[in-house]
Image (cartoon, rainbow, N blue to C red; front, side, top):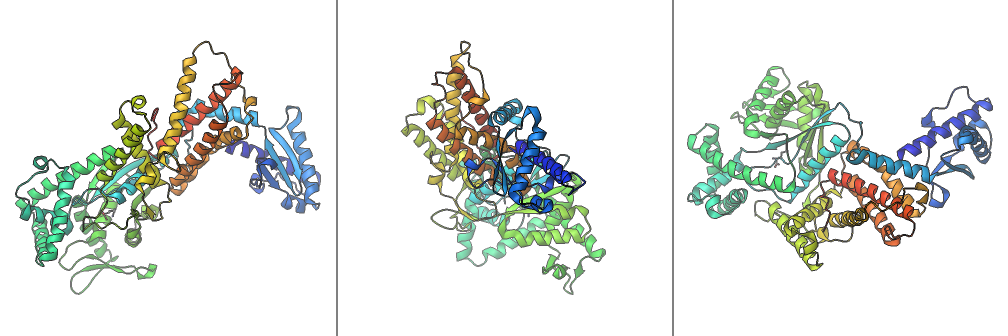
Length: 589
Ligand code: ARG
């Protein structure tokens, strides 16, 4: 839609300039930005409305009169070829109705000519953007909060790529620290040499169970916490036995977590480990201390004072020389910029850590890194279940794998209940794709910053504002197109844009035309919910149209060909948008 809108804005601006010049009110051509268009309050008024007040003032005439003059001059500009639409004066407004056939034909052609490239832009062309997301800890498996994080990071990355950026996806695995030692300690005490393989358990769940075990044990035994700290000291000292256990358990955790990543279809260009970067953090802090950016307290600890930018004083090295969370992040950021000199770095991390990132960005700026101004915390809200809050220590979190299993089972049940199993073929595979569609759509449909409640039942419903509903729309178009294609060679209908006369057809065409704009905005705002909202709009409009209008069963073959081509364009845009928000497109369900 953007093109026809721009075309009209340019036309009107030329017409206004002409009138202004004739009235001796302006020498120069009016810059196009001065001509603003609005969406008319009612669709029957047209597709665009231009308020005349600003020009009327310069012309010293009533707005309605100005509108009439501008209309006249537009008609002169249009000349023999005519304008791409119809112009009407409505009080102080100039209303424009687009020439639908011309516009519709153009948009549909463009969608089908560009195919999967339709909707890509160049707005971030030449930019290198690093996106960090997921960043789990190796003491437990992924939970529902990670699923929101993962899909946000993956989707924002895909959208930025569609906007022309070069994107480098990274993960930062927190594999060291006292909490990691806790699951190790519980395993040492209670594990009796068991292995995930022997227990037939997914290896990250196996590790997570020992973390929960630690927490129940530490409630009974006050020495548990001290023992965990002691284990951390042995780890820091490089104790071989401790390091060996650490490697084994980290492998278990990471292998399991990676299996969940492949199940959900997300991936990374590079994985960082805190155990590799925290030493670099210490070095950088010591350099900063020497440079006078940080200061040392009497007890030997090293601090930064950020009170001048409205933050607090923050310890960077404890008195025993150990590092804290932010120390590691300083090292990681610097190392990363060396590995991949990004123009921007986006951290997808929960809103609980907002303060942490303010401090981190403040410190990096103070250290004088020019890129520090281009760091962004994409903060997202909490996800809870309808039944309440998740608590990780008590093991009442919603495990990601369990949730995926549950969604997948519900989807399989739905397919069988509807008697679709034979049509679908591989029910398990389809159910898994529906589960992902349900999950990703539900998680992305809320703006990132907001807290949300994830309702599994609602998310998997085939009707309503859900992923499966969108997927179902896709399968209905696909099945209709299959039928059409089976009609084969003998079919002689031709596409004729002027046959698109239904109001919904026009709505659909306008939506198709506005898709590139939606992608650009969602990229500029790091907000996939604009894409999901768009998808819902398009699917709902299409569904109403499809219900009210026969596509294949029309006596006029040209009408069949025309509507089928419109449907093909809808299918293409659905597929493109599904790709950005990681909803699998299904031919059958
Ligand atoms: N592992 C951390 C956690 O679970 C999140 C890390 C976020 N990323 C970062 N660069 N600090 O809370």
